[in-house]
Length: 286
Length: 239
Image (cartoon, rainbow over all chains, first blue to last red; front, side, top):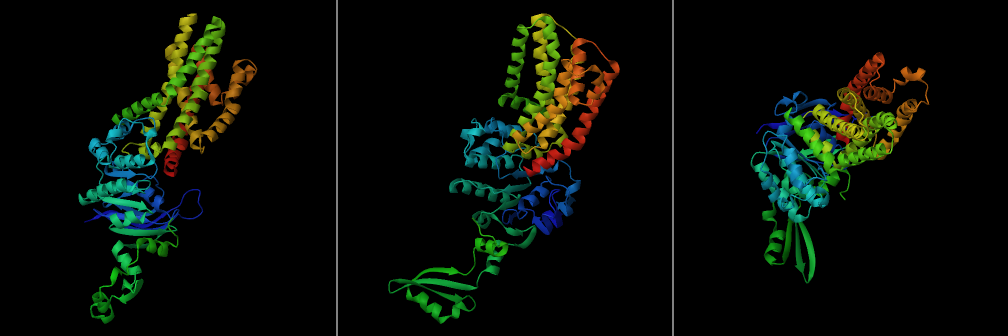
């Protein structure tokens, strides 16, 4: 698989700011992967995404989109990408279907609007004005809007924020199916559940710099402890014990505990992405 | 061209759905009612001022309202990530603003003819309204793009009218002496007013009319290229 994006030493400064908001970041987004950019508010995630979708242009460094300099690519770029913004992006006095048909009209190739809207449970509300939609319905319509042109690369910002678990699951399943068909996803979020379930690789953005780029699995191993924690019931009370992973098959105490039949839970010492987020960014998730 | 046509059709549809066109029509109808109570001479004197207000202040106001509403709805941002150029988006909005101005001219002209039998050079009026409308659309965009919200934009519009529009109205009703007219031509409002009055009365000060056309055309070009175009994208990106 090649790279959908090669970003090298990217720097960006807003005209009104004194210092760079993005401070020399380098990363690749591989074709066919779900790449998560994580970080606290104001870390530079959204700015990075806006640069990649050509909303912000006066950057330094190099960005290549499937090998071509992003600065040299014209508006045909937008035939190939889909962008799902966090905030609703629809004409509120038009119906959901009117909105989708209007946006779809500008693309050469479009997806089946009915199929997409049915999948996210909005087809029956197609003739309702978007102004009457709940927040969750607008979020789902945002996702349909992003998928309208069968994009090659999908940019999603807080894609499940405001959705109930059932609808969040549907959207995540659709993203996973899109990736399985070869699509590339650039995801910015602070919802670690989404990251755990979707991302192939993640990068942590802190104060305009990338602190870590790896797979969620490798990060969990790197920041976790190589141990097994066992909870067991002993004389009616819950007790716990930790054992090093190395040589655990020969650990007599561990094996004895297993054979005792008192074990209630066993967990490896890998840490959660939420804990890694706090360690790397120094910011607690709310 | 196909995308531009779709953009213009979308703008027109939204003018109706967002009640902007109906509100503009109601305003025009109020003028018609006014004409019923005026003599032919009074109506003919008032008509240039009414058309001028619609082409200048009302255009800026409606364009600002529509821009800030779309900004609030996030639709400008989503339009920026579609395979259409920024110039196409701006042109479509300019055309829709122009249509509002023309609708008002049409209603006023028909009313003047039906009520008082007044006719004038309609072709010339349309050309002049198009020139003045484009300049005021550019001014409307410039004011909107420099304002955080619609309220802030209204404040700027009041400031603009105080400096540029009120002196022109004062000139129209004879409060400002004619010897200051060339100085007043620096005001886009007065240049627009001069063109509209010329087309309606058929009385031309040729050099001044040519100067007004050239000034408004250059002003539109400069504002669209150096103010509206660069700020539009920046504005959409920042949300």
